[in-house]
Amino acid sequence: MDALAVVATAWGVLMGISPLLQIRRMVQRRSSADVSIGYLSVLLVGFLLWAAYGFSIRNPALVVSNSVALVVGIATISVARRYRHQEG
Image (cartoon, rainbow, N blue to C red; front, side, top):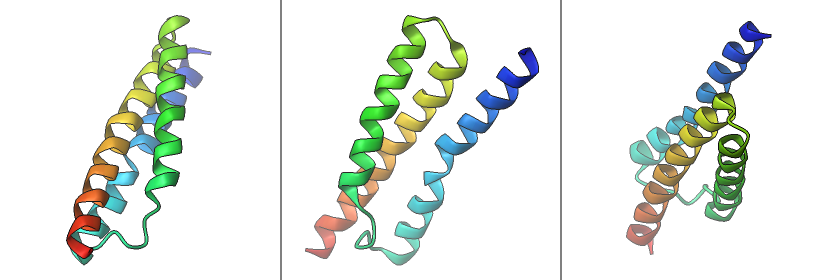
């Protein structure tokens, strides 16, 4: 059970930082035209809710992975919005 928790948390963190690949692509192309800010916003609400739930049940796996995803998601939306304003 403990090993599964560690692996699940590590994979959750990896999933949480994966949008950094999208940020890299936006910066390279200097465009966010192919990024859905609405979709990312829906995900952010989910990450926030899951992190809050994890905190309420004292589950570090949920808190850590969803907090990382929340921070990276906010960064992704910020970069997308910055390029969106430059494109318009």
